[in-house]
Length: 339
Image (tube, rainbow, N blue to C red; front, side):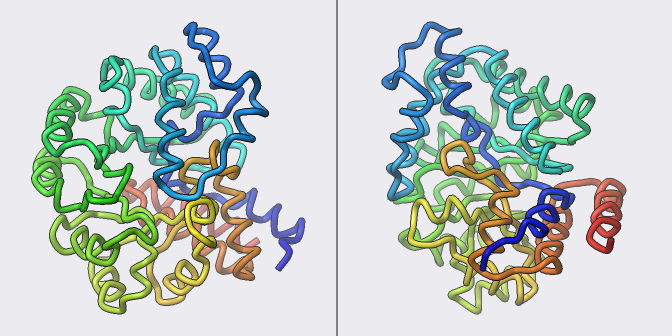
């Protein structure tokens, strides 16, 4: 199905929340070059065009190699401020009204950038964007699953002075050999400290169904990132429905690391009443922000306005918002989608 200009306009104006967005994954090549120059860092490529041309991922692991190498240009609080401000400006232009933003402190502290530098720069950007752009955003701190659980626990302890700035914790990076159970004690402590919990269950990973079971039954997360392989197991779908869990799906990035955007699974879960949502993941690397992800799914699955509005409604329903703020966004969405 070709997405008409009318449907593109509808998607662009649709009030939406973005709940699966890695701030380091919004580092566009132009900003990467600007930060490298500012910090005196030499890059392998000589232009933004060369950088984009080098993006040829065929797996999660091949993507992560490039992803982590690019982060070395992020050094100062101003760098993190500029990174988040660029994303929030783009998101606001696509009528993202609310965003929950992942950040990976271990990827920075492990190379000598202080935790305070990372979170301070990001927080300042969020405060300014709410004032200047009218977009509300919060932070979710992710642990790197290919690091040790002990490192994750020490990072959790390091975050506590900034507890008021961090809404919840997540788990990302290379899932191979790093099941959710590895971090059970860390997430139990995070819950005690008042953090909300989410974990990545990346698509088509070895042991994916067991990993999804672990996050639902053992870790008892408040949300699941990706997780669309649950569609293949009715018992997992039933458990997700029983717990009222939402899934944060990312069609375009799916198509970079496996064959296809997983439209059968995403739409199948949607039609079963699971609160699936559409998000952009790492848009600077995968070539599409949240509106483009809505468009891609609409194109491959033949979605119309009603289904797209339902996906947007889900994004507010499963967001970690106050009841009053959620009601305000949903009223805005209803007014728009019913127009």
